[in-house]
View 1: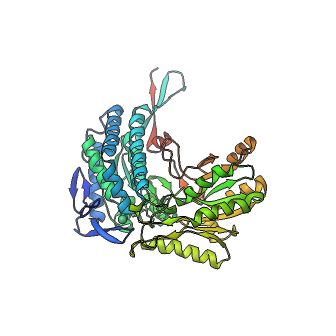
View 2: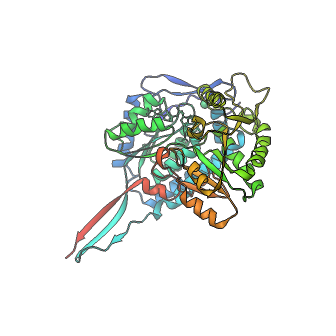
View 3: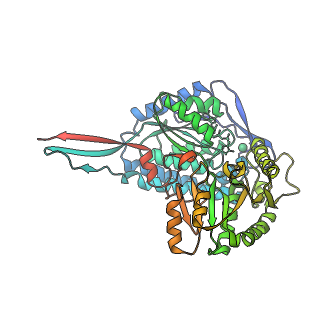
Length: 485
Ligand code: NAI
Ligand code: MG
């Protein structure tokens, strides 16, 4: 029997599986063939109320807030071990639910384990500081949990994004209400069950599944929530910030990008090529940090795009179980959206340099999109400026460092960038001038790097996840002052 077949997933509130108050359910669809194979609870405001109340009780009264940071860390470390022990089941479930190639499901489980391990180890290493102040006074800071954290998770990397949110939030002593994406909730429910097994007290890690407007919106506007963290689209990010603003709550927003790879003529082009391709093909291009623009110095533009074109032409979208170059996109809507982007770019005069294919025997009901490489893209066009969230790469030619930086910084986003050059001085100059939360030199990290702080400038959002930095976001400084005379 295939992963998750027939699962009727419930919400997890106060450590108990519960159906939504309305009793309705949402079909769980595999995008490789469009088949329904399970269902999740369709929750709404009353379910959110129950989950927030449970998280509040666990925060105020429960053993969680009295536990030492070391003990919280041990529970997270155990959670990582349990995720590892259930690796095959989780990877298969994630692949089936999202359509991602089997090896990407495995990579996501590995990353999730690392997050729980990392934040488990970090939990008791977040120090405050003592501040020189007036004579006769002792002043110091401590890092306090926000309280109840709401995590609204997207469908592209549910295991990984949940792990970076839950790992950091729980390490700092917060309690959680998670609303996974309606398109991919099954592994989130499973992880919350494993968290109980790892020793998380009931009510610390609650899950409410459902649609964004029905379950996500009341969660982000809930007065019982102290902090909101979100990864997803810019438009939904705006809606969530407005909702959180009703209660003046803090937010972390990770909102995607239009990330450039800058290839100078003196770069090791052989080394750059597979990385540039992978950065847009991984997960079908449905990655916030996808390298969706490649800026190429004019003397090597022809040669580099010719090599890219060869590789793109050979790419084949396949059902997840074939573990091909890429899988289907998450759903019909996204596949149509991406196809619309491609058609519009062609109509606007961008040149198709290469097109990959969809496996001839891919199931009819799947949501496939062949990879496309565009050249001669107008920097002012929609394709050059907006996130496609699919396997579509736009190539541009540039002359010299200044133009490279202007083009790289020429969108409203600022998430990740790659700089490819063998000139040491230029590596530093260009990296410094790029406006992005992460810059890689002669490398690129699409989605990786548990230890590396991650987040955006501009429309890519604000706040930082991953690494130690996330622990700062998931807590607040408290200053205590003693007058000891
Ligand atoms: P979305 O941003 O609407 O969905 C992400 C999450 O937000 C889901 O859990 C959803 O249920 C929830 N949500 C939706 N509306 C909400 C609301 N009003 N209040 C609270 N929660 C809400 O993304 P969607 O529609 O699935 O994808 C559209 C585009 O978003 C993609 O084409 C892509 O450009 C971008 N996206 C970016 C991601 C990233 O990693 N930065 C991840 C997913 C999507
Ligand atoms: Mg699904």
